[in-house]
Image (cartoon, rainbow, N blue to C red; front, top):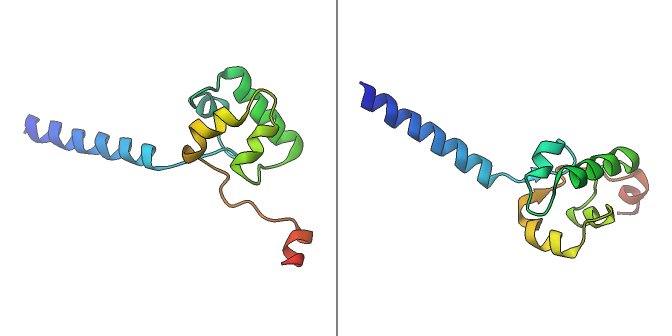
Length: 98
């Protein structure tokens, strides 16, 4: 019975790990701890991302992160595939133009 329990626990943990790896981090919803887990982002830059987001609204693309002081093309190149902005509503003007 103990072996069966260990196997089940291993499967659950493996599935959870795969889900975390397969999912992308939403930079419009992530907290400082999640952002600080990115390659090249520490606590100060994570807080700068959140402050920018609070001041300017949600990021419309991952590339918009480059507008945050201290984040540049090298960071984007390393992390782009791990990031998303989720479903960001387009402004009314832009939607009307399309």
